Structure formats: structure tokens, C-alpha cells
Image (cartoon, rainbow, N blue to C red; front, side, top):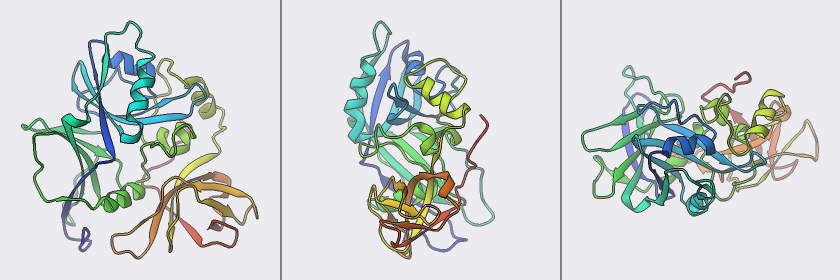
Length: 311
């Protein structure tokens, strides 16, 4: 079992085969990313990672990344592996005269997810996007996490191994990612949502006071005119949910008010399932069901962060 008792410490290291790495290299690496992605890459300290999205002209996320500086002229972008090739091709269209190159560096690194619970009474502040380096040149990035859990992304040179017991229990990773209200864009949901629909403005994935980037005008207008009607929520249900399964509310009988962003994952003890859903905020207080108005009941769980309304 990954989780033992609430007052016991545990640590689980899980190989993340579904993620890949794009290496962005050159004197203009950070400046180039600053003009293409939703976050600030100019005022960027090495001690911090960046969550950022690349968007279409319509403001829809074509991919999202966890970025870290390997050196001042070398940035690693971790993304869903099924979007890696398309993302590189899309970014390369904008290189023009910039001193920057992009390559698929997935084979150069091994990506691990670490799930950790401190023993009761020994909790340490877990700050998302904080970067830790160690003597073995491994990079650890603190991710958004649910209360009482620390989730981190670790990037290792491919010739190195990770201390601890590796595990293929990827469903445990997804359970805790869902419970943290955090999702990297993958091929199944690409080009469908603006960043605010996946709560990126609330987990430091969008900088609203930087220069232009693809889709910036649409994203800013939606934020400051208050026109974002859909947000991401954590839903709990007794049975499994499929990706894109429609969500209904008794506040609008017979009308679909949202859809699942992830297939549901069972809890470590298999007692319940959780999924991330994107739905109209007006229906969040209502009685929710999946598949139809008479389907299985959903209950929304508290997000471990505050949804920001004023940026």
C-alpha cells in the first residue's frame, strides 16, 4: 500500500513514462520562451520552476510545460510526451533570428514522480515550483499538492538511478495529481481550453503583466472582463468516469454543464474514484450527476488552493 496511516511517513518514487523533455538551448532561450509562453521567463530565478502554456491565437492551450533552468542558456521543458513533437514544431515556427535551438531530450533524462507524506508533527512547508538541486545534478521540482502530501517532479540524467524503491504504480501518481487540482495538457484535451479553465492563473501558470505571446489578448480579456465561466474542479464518485463523460446539474435539467478532463482514478484503498472536471461555475453548488440527469452522483471536493479572481 502506498498510504499506510495518517501519522506515518512514506515515500513512493514512480517512473513517469507519459512525460518527455524538450531542451531549449542558446543565448536567447529564456527571452524566446518569454515571447511564446504564458509565464514570465525574464524575471526568473534559478531557484524557481515555471508552469506555462503555449496557446493558439484563440487563447486555447496547445500544450503546457513545467520549465526549469539547467543553466542560464539551457532550459528544460517537461510536457506530455504525446504533444512533444507537435510542440517543438509549433515553437520552431517562431524562432526566426533568435539564438535558440530546440530538441527532443527525452532520452537524455529519466523522469520520476515522488509522493511523500511527512510523519505527523514534522511537516515542512511545501512551496509549489521551488527547485532543489543536489550534488548528483538531479533536479527536484515541488508541484502543487493536496494537504498533507508533497508531490515533486524529479529530472535525472538517464545514466543515474533514483534512491528508494521505484514503482510503476502510476495510478497512485494520478490520484494525487487529481487531488491536487493540477493537470498538464495532453493530446486528448489540447486546443480546447484557455488557461483559466484549468485554473492555471491560480497556480502561477499565467503572468498577466508581461509582454505579448500567442493568445495573450484573448486570455487577458477573458480574465479582466470576467468572462471565464468554466473552471476546473475535483469530482468524487463511487463508480468510474470516462474521459469526456458529460456532467449534468439539477440547476439546469437536461443540459450538459461540464465534462471530465481525466478518466477517474480509484483511491489507493479503492473506496472511491476521483476525476478532474471542467464545468460552468454557476452549476457548482447544484446536485451533479454523470452521463445523464439520472446518472451516478458526483460530489465536488475542496481545491487545495484558492481560485483567484483578482490578478
